[in-house]
Length: 398
Image (cartoon, rainbow, N blue to C red):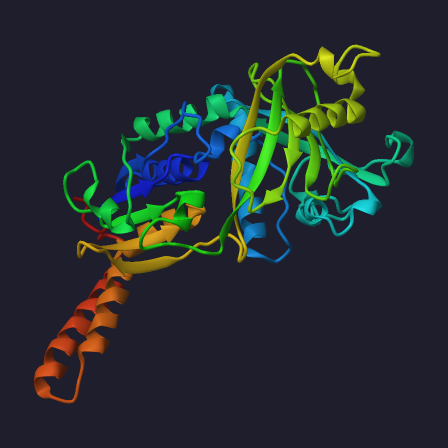
């Protein structure tokens, strides 16, 4: 049975979620978002991202599973789909002992380990010998990763959604319940998937107070660099960082950056921009002609993005809420594969059976007129569950 699904948000999480649901072929998907690929706004984080694959999750956490499972798909896209704007990059992660305890070093804690859990996930992982370390570095690892040109990747994701039958429309919501009435079919949505990132902090019916912004600032330059490099910290402050990555297909080189928690400032700090450029050249002198400084950088733009971060980690939950207009929707947050799995389960025989069985048990009471409808509903649930194991019968699609 197909479901009418509304996905809120058209950043990388929203578009990827919608693509997986639409590509599954079982669901009718509508993407609703205030900001779309091609827009640049402080509320829209994805266009400002580098973006790359650098695992930072703690071993054994749900995020580790997400990061582990993400690599094979990114590797496939980089290898087989050049039109997506994703390419492989030689990557070096430098560690300085004196950075321990800073915000950036804590963020990179797993990334900078020599026995990192992802050493068997990414290709060509190795520990750099001391002879290859720049001055001031205490250790480093190298491996192959990917870098996305978000100016290409986000529109590619949107085009793939359209290719697989999803519809895209603009919309501004004050309450999550409003999404149930925005499906392109004109019918009420069966499932609403919230991928609004930092906007979930103020979205009515969600208001997730565990969210906070982690401000990042970058300088995008035309200078070429054939390596992606990051350092565990800087001497310029505990929340400043050094990283460089070269975007695919002429997207320029991203120089960063910072990790400024609870900072909502949308405008670039010119002093920070100068420090970013100086640190980038210090780490990778080949970025400019020999003997030159930041004056040799050809700047495309300065940018600021607000990373949506969460004190309790990434949220992946199902919930049922009633809105101010009485609408009720099933909500699922973040991480596309889990969202697709939840949606498919709820519209399978076994998912519907479990639902009816649960409702039947709730209905049963002490009186006969409570017992009878409860038992009937529970039996219907058991019948649905039984149908799941009959290979010749499949759920009806509408």
